Image (cartoon, rainbow, N blue to C red; front, side, top):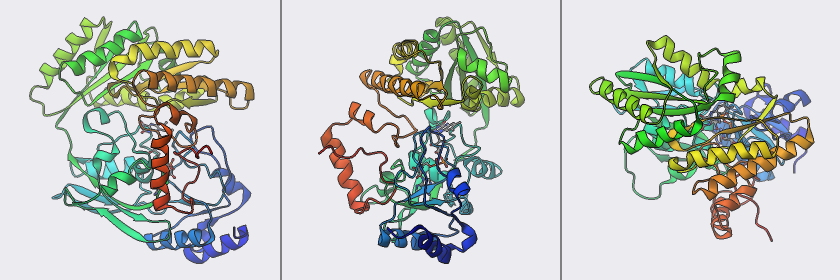
Length: 462
Ligand SMILES: Cc1cc2nc3c(=O)[nH]c(=O)nc-3n(C[C@H](O)[C@H](O)[C@H](O)COP(=O)(O)OP(=O)(O)OC[C@H]3O[C@@H](n4cnc5c(N)ncnc54)[C@H](O)[C@@H]3O)c2cc1C
């Protein structure tokens, strides 16, 4: 590999020296993300255009230097950890809306745009870009695409892959290709689909065409309060079984509510075992009846009370608590590991009970805040990463939780990906033939294995 200073100089020729970071302090800032993993890059580069990204890829390809894309580093699985050093391409300068096309209901953006900034802009025209990861204030569209992110509203509207119509990609050798477009139903391979959720392991995304939908005319948000987690979880299955798909069905347990109340003061009941945030959206006609039906289902499942948000301010407060919950658990312990397993909805009570038992077994506090409607659990194991013995227990507990999800007919990731963190756990859901197929695919796009190496697919056991 080319020496570090030459790499810095060559990148400076492409993007300008002011857009290359190489001091120890700068590199350290790019050595971590929202997961507990760590690893130092050799250099960080901030391109301003597709052309520059292409030139950077040509250099990495020629010199066989590992390279990875980075949005805001909020991924929870070590996806942006440069495990083999090399170049981090930070997309923060490529953050523009390029084309807001209301008649075709699309918006074309650069990958570094912050998800909420985009959503705020399109809402001014009466439209929404639906995928709303709880990290939307910080995460980027490039990161959302790479991780195929979900969010509270994805129960009704689907995850990121359902909202991407086309991509501009820079391949390993610098070639720029476009997939999909504003027209629907292109013939041939679904190449866009292949790149959404590939965890940044196949190419760099430099543009994306996103699907827009009309903003709902009405919204109703309820908070259902439960004495047991089982009753809340059973309500979720019962609502869906009734044929109602709310916009969101989010659950939070007592431990998480306590942490939230200490910082955000969302008004959650501290003496309850769990709450469900249930939101309906759409046309106003029929919404009242639907809300009453949901309240009946809640009562049939022993709800203590159902509160209706009276106005937009109350609704915003309920959501601020939910969306700030991950950050709030920092009150309990300085670090957390989020186990994003998914189970069939009806298995939620059983698996949640297993999670409680695993927490007891390893003597670790675990809080639950999750997309209950999708069966997508987020047990947050709270710990102190400075304590290696505790960290080792966390790893064992996380593996057992993901095994419990897989054994229940679920999977090891609903939306956060595999990254570095769940490489071993891929064996719970894939056999060696499946993994060999994935490796073949990776090799077809990245024969030198330079693009985000070491992520998503475990190395073959020889
Ligand atoms: C508090 C909190 C709440 C969260 N809530 C949710 C949630 O509700 N739903 C959910 O799905 N996730 C959630 N996440 C996880 C995380 O926010 C998402 O995975 C998000 O999509 C990551 O976006 P990012 O811009 O931070 O990407 P990064 O973390 O920077 O990168 C993620 C991956 O994308 C790749 N990448 C980034 N940009 C590009 C590009 N232009 N080209 C190629 N590859 C690229 C990186 O290499 C990496 O593999 C949450 C995280 C936190 C910390």
